Length: 464
Length: 130
Figure 1 (cartoon, rainbow over the protein chains, first blue to last red):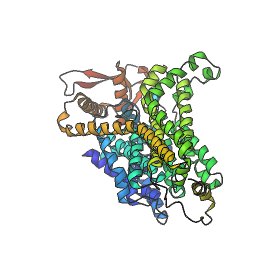
Figure 2 (figure 1 turned 90 degrees about the horizontal axis):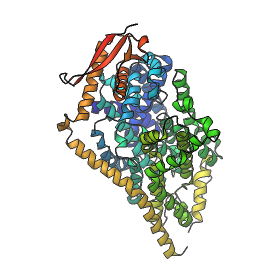
Figure 3 (figure 1 turned 120 degrees about the vertical axis):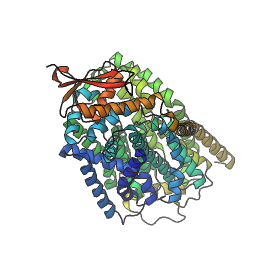
Figure 4 (figure 1 turned 90 degrees about the vertical axis):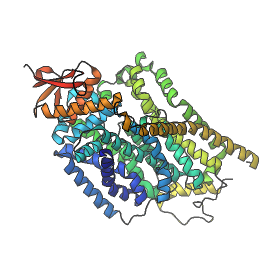
């Protein structure tokens, strides 16, 4: 019962921000757990800087989101915000999360995320001291707060420090992020019929259960951040109507960087890709760097209060730069471990993308789907970042891989799943009759839209 | 591209894409199936070892919050690495500050293992010798 109360309270708390970002009640319901997590995380950051107990800060940030929703009331809603769409994408994704009924004994859930939630729940002074406490530095006190902060809020609201509400809150947030992946793929393939686009979007979201089917519901944050990032990136770089979903997309990528440190290189790659693609719209391109700035704020906060990053403090940068054999000899083992986890799905998705690009590129453009080259650029950037982290890891590589590779590869599996889902739509969609492809030339579009839809339509016009 | 070749290319690309997505759908379906099984048996599984462990941890945390003097620095004397982490987690949850050196502590905390205790484990707190 406490779990239901905790999830309901957080969902209500997230509704104003979720509505401000979507202007759609059904989508706001889906987004509200993740929005509440963001509200909680901002409250934690303010609490760390300005001290005091957590709940008053949470209340203050909540009221601020109510004001944001008020100011956003006149904005156009994001597309695809009907109850039918939200239900088609959200309800099926509830079923795999029944795994939350496994006992929440996952190592990182306790040693990292709920430990951090514990000291956040004790208020600003205790949390500041805990972040800088060398005794628990091994629990990575520099990790960002989104996975922990809402659990701390739930514990304080319930006045009960137990683990069932903690897993319920974690699962609600992860479900929210995973459904947003399905929504993003649905928007990217919106010109295809729903009978094809919706199942493809759901299949892409199912990649969250690769490579480990228990991972999304065992209290970890890896699926949460991977899904939030991918949903944001797909909306930003692949949605059929990118301008209207840009605030939602930036929120999702920002949520990812506030969930795990690995979100930073991902957000950086997306910002670079978006800047190149939106070079004719510098204002919108500049906004794409917002998540990187938010990551910097958390990094500065954690370091100010004494948190240490194990890679920065003990990483083998020097050995790597000097070509030390011991550091570089890890490379084959790292690649073999990554291949074991996602080699098949990535290989198949790459093959579909390569064949599709060669044979069906014109058809893809005619259907109004953005290219997926950006997606593979992000994939490459993440692969390079993860490989680099393992190369400089201060830990024995066998141990480090065995304890983490099945989780860090969730991003890779989901990126591959998104690419495959879009090519599935391109392959099976009926002849292009997309309403997004006008029979007559467009009237002059705002500068920001020309680079996206204008180019795509021009390409579509020449497609066979 | 001629119609026949285009249809063949569409089918091949769709088939390869399906092949990429099938493992994901299978895993999610497996999670749903296993989760439904766990949910159906949840009420009757209170004696399951992992459930008992969580209950024991929650009770240890309550005891820690109740018995450790406010503001005391605590040294956790726990040789088992896994339990050391669990006790650190419970300390953070209940506002107990831990230190890494026994000589800086006000209180030393040990885990007692005793089958006669309700959860099989309890806490022993002793004043640290400075």
